[in-house]
Image 1 (cartoon, rainbow, N blue to C red):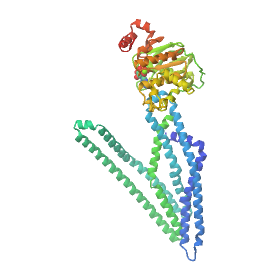
Image 2 (cartoon, rainbow, N blue to C red):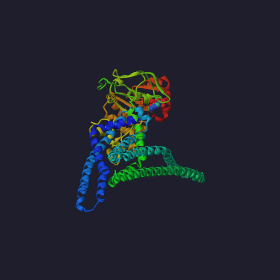
Image 3 (cartoon, rainbow, N blue to C red):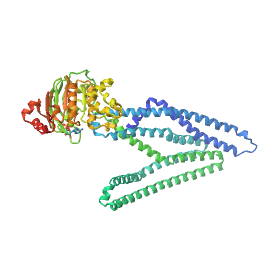
Image 4 (cartoon, rainbow, N blue to C red):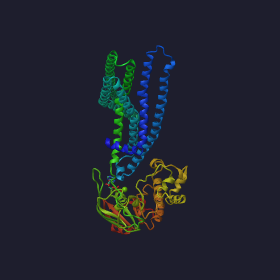
Length: 584
Ligand code: ADP
Ligand code: MG
């Protein structure tokens, strides 16, 4: 998965790889100026100072000019790198966002019923953040470490090869050992984090339940269990602090060893006369620099590892093939007549229980017919509507519209022919106007208002403080169930499609408004193939045909009158509802 993640990141970097190259190189040159050349100048300066006999200030002008020149140059080059980085980084982050957006939205409906919105948003954000952490580390931390390791090594190679190798080997060993120690310690810092959240959780839980605690006189027992938790947390914290300190001690010891070795070598070569004081100073500066940079190396690697593993969950989604795919060679699907033929379909949900919903179901709905579906909940009514919209594919058999198998056409083409009001209408956190117009983005203002009126939404919308401009809150939480349904119906009314599917579209309405809407729907349904799933039989009584669906089987099929005469399931449902809803 790490490889997968890095590959996705690389795809986002690639369109601007040259900008990234300039950015990283510019920053590298800046680091070379600061961490490699500046120390050279400083040690030269001290070298000049070590023998001042007969010198005047002007003898130092060269070195001062060099210093000024170096600063101007490194700053200029560094800026160029930084500006390129600003662009490269922000644009790459945007590309990652866009790609993730596309990847998530291309998933099929079962993906969204199996994943919580919240966790998807978190994955989405973490993925982008991961890249952000990674790119900053490459641009700055790793870049500067590289410069501080490779260039000093090359320079020291000329001055004193033994010291150069000591420097290199020590740095590498130090880095790896810090990485290892940090990994070992991780278990303990995790424990501390776990206890932290346990304590927070307990506090929240007990405070929310403050009243029951008092009611049942449980303060002392709550207090003592909280105290036990507190003690465990102290233990975990102490262990973690101790370990942190041990690692610190290890670092100091390791550094001391390096210093002693470098001191000894320096003194030895100075006595031999092979290196000067000036060079000893240069070695010291390099050594101190690398120590400072490596001090937190363990933490840096930790962060990088965490970032990459955080990205993992989103990278997994990148790897998914959406279960519903457009055909390679889609059949053109213009405006259809609306003949629906369900041929011998079998369908089961792919979850743990493998719920079989339909087994060899066959059904013909001729163009323009209006069919009501009733039956006990769980019978498969919603599933059938979703199959018609190809939110899922049938396992066997086929669904044809105008003799064309719906899996042979593009999903967008298919869905453009169907106006659908789902059982739980969902609205964007946008204005009501925009939500209605979603059904047909080309609709004029008047058409939107007309649809709202027909759906009896206009009456409540006008009462809202900002009318049609009112924002509905995430998923429409600010509207009542019935209001949401009316907005969803208005939205479907705007969409002029030959097939209409209403899945309990009026279930949250009172019988009176339902009656009004049913009248409006009559208008909408004219000349269109319509499927109405309803709980209240009064809603569908007038339709051409009523189908009773029970356990995925059609148990009765006919008009209201015929079914009543049959004295079967429909008759039973009807007599149950008779008193409640029959208002004639
Ligand atoms: P209805 O709309 O008639 O009440 P549904 O079509 O919603 O019935 O459900 C039919 C069966 O399929 C039920 O047993 C239900 O538990 C199951 N089911 C519905 N949706 C899913 C899903 N997303 N995953 C798994 N099983 C489901
Ligand atoms: Mg349903």
